[in-house]
Length: 245
Ligand code: PGA
Image (cartoon, rainbow, N blue to C red; front, side):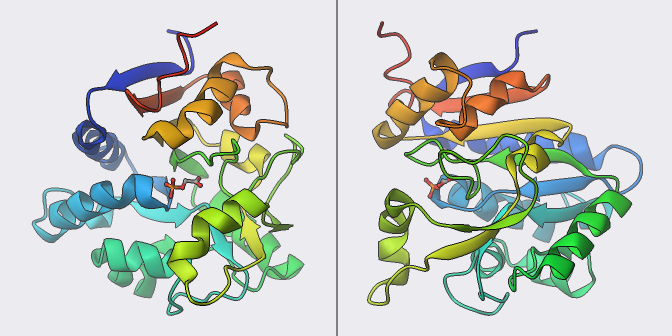
């Protein structure tokens, strides 16, 4: 099968059962496989549904561990606007995962020793088996902005202006943060399986660059095309530029 596989949905909501099925398949595997969450509006409906599955025991929380892609520098789990805060608000059962160490957050201090300890912890847990991904309008994956080397590991980064603008409403009336700690591109593609979702017309240019443009750090998401088990879920608007020459 070609990787990435590309599936075009009539509506973004159709991704929710597909993502839940991914989680269920993972939870059925031996051990406690590590799931990598993505944040952002793309995954809001999924997290609502996941919360419901976990609350009703239809997905057994004890069968999984979790981590996530990126965090604003200095944003601890309780701080509004942060990624862990967003995840726990969107999917309240994750608060319990956090308390019992089953949800491993990125070190928001960005210190080299904390980052090394985080990477070591993920290795101890067997590495990320399934990584969910969004894509930025500029083709970023996590906070790997255009130009980030494909070989990058966890690191602290400056946020691109488009990324800060997209985060502006989230932080208003405050200014959006300028720096974040992020999984690197090499970290992301080390995951066994990748599932990227992109919905809405404002993602169409980035989706085209990811799937049709050169495999180049100018579009970090183009790296997906070198992964043997990558899957892309699009709605029609996000896929709109794929057919054009
Ligand atoms: P979004 O963000 O889901 O809010 O569009 C995705 C991203 O920037 O990676």
